[in-house]
Length: 412
Image (cartoon, rainbow, N blue to C red; front, side, top):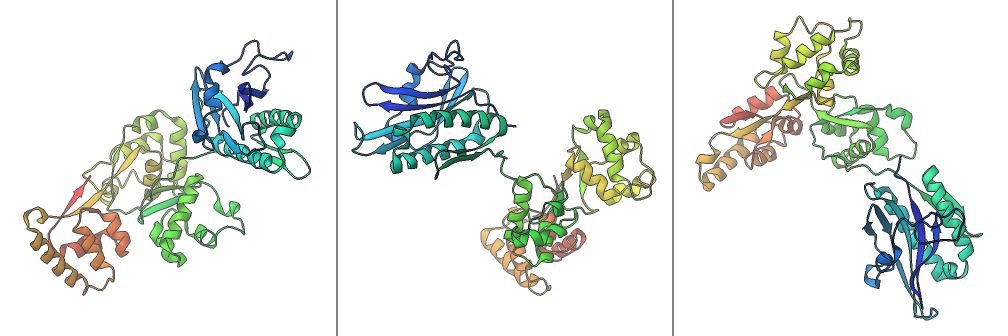
């Protein structure tokens, strides 16, 4: 849900009295009121903050956040210059009050929209200065509807209405690489809409938990940058998760969260169900814990699977690794290719080496190898990146690198 609005009020700059509150909901929440339902005492001392509620013109038409005691006031003051007003201007502000520890960010767009809409209405028909009674009931309904339904649609007259809706704000999705593999968390086909982007609809059936982002782009015959944006869009709405591409040459090790797996019965049951091969018996939690703890830096998945062959009966290894990675009980130990003598050569020697390697790579057959080697000489690259760019296995990537120089493979 969304944090509650404690008070909503409308303030203006009066030509003789200065800043004052015209409408407040609930009554007495900002200034004293004779209403029988009013608060016994206001939440705030308006006189002490009135110059920030009705600020100078340079602070108008922008979001203002004011921390006042235990409360936070969010507003978007507006300034209208026109000779029809007593001081040649009209300054007003719609303010929303929240608890100081609450996060009101989802309200920012609607507060701005509300302010700009009423600014337009005032410029066109003097709505704020001529129809204060209608404004009072509208603000009250905005307060009630946003708190209870998180949206409102309130008619103001035959031609205008307040139409607001709160939307949750998520953190931006993490940057994804060409070798990352998207895994669905929902049934995307049920969410598909005919009006979706054509590329989005084309890639949905290709997200299988095995294919990398680059592979999906190739299979869909679509531009990689567009496919990447589509997958990031799905990540934003928690429709997919991102993991590293699975290869038996990968290495994994346990995180401190392995202790959670040891004590969480629900996670153990979920894991046993997820990793079981079709028709195979469910593996015991003790065996699953043993298998996770047996993963470490110095051993690849292929070597680990050979050593644990008996205990892995009935377990889908890829799903076993995927589950541990998603639940953060294991982490990936990445392999990086580093040119072994790069620190011992002069700049001109490095250029000669690059030229020789580029010439060699052009004869191997892969059209992208020249660019790959140039980027490798500028710094260490993960083996996942090399495999994805050249569309080859890690074993083939190692053999290719070793044919073109002396390389060290660092696991970290």
